[in-house]
Length: 201
Image (cartoon, rainbow, N blue to C red; front, top):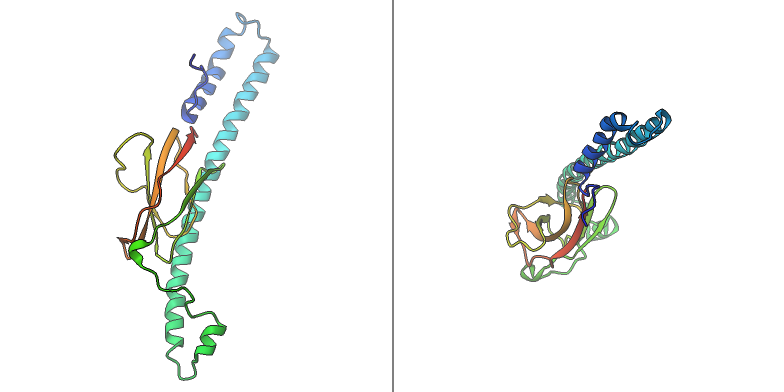
């Protein structure tokens, strides 16, 4: 039997608001005292505040992640230029490069065989996608409802793991995969497809 309590968060909060509006109308018929009505209205308000606070936290977190990624990207661009210039200085030596960890220690790899890993877990902020960068610029993230064929347009590009899917209003099983990107072009093989459950935030 279908539960009368909505699973999807937007519908749930609408349902809670409806209880607040209707409770006084039916208080006498349902044997609710003024104290009962007050207590239950306060419970409605508390759960609505909790959902609003969580939504605000998710929005703030997503904004902070975006600010972090922009700051890291700008820093990396500048520091690469600085180090490239330093390596042309008359006094530069390989010993300096090693001491400052300016030299790559990653062996050459066949880009065609690169494949990122992908793991997903739930959190208060949303589904957290942890993936491996494999020395590339980042990944394009794809998502679809489980059981459908079309992946549609990419969900996002992310340059730093993890990516957090903070979209609200989704409920049920979804599938994800990530594709490595370098200079705006796909590199290597896509990750395995990973299924995860959205809880109707």
